[in-house]
Length: 129
Image (cartoon, rainbow, N blue to C red):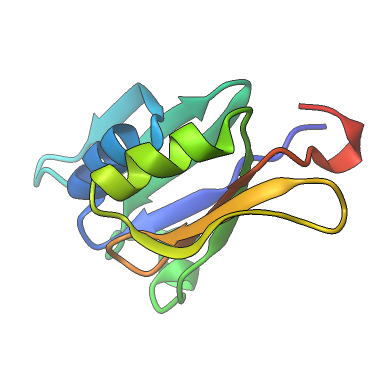
């Protein structure tokens, strides 16, 4: 089984650029509507994938998510300190600097421009990446 978090943004195009520049995500695909809104995008990081789209669209999912608050996404990475340095250099709001955790992980946490919380660390849930 695989899981793919979905994050909707008021300005999905800007969010995609920031996720690439600050966190090192890679654009897999971006589909836009005639009005330029992002109907669906996929960004990869290692073997993981996050789906991104624009808020304010039509359909059951979009309507259910219309008033949703920020989400939290955790991403397993190898070099927490280098990743943190890149995010900080790109102006991401750092909520927690890199720190060793009691359970053996090294983590840091940042907030994107639309309030979503991104955590990056060495702990791999379930024992693998």
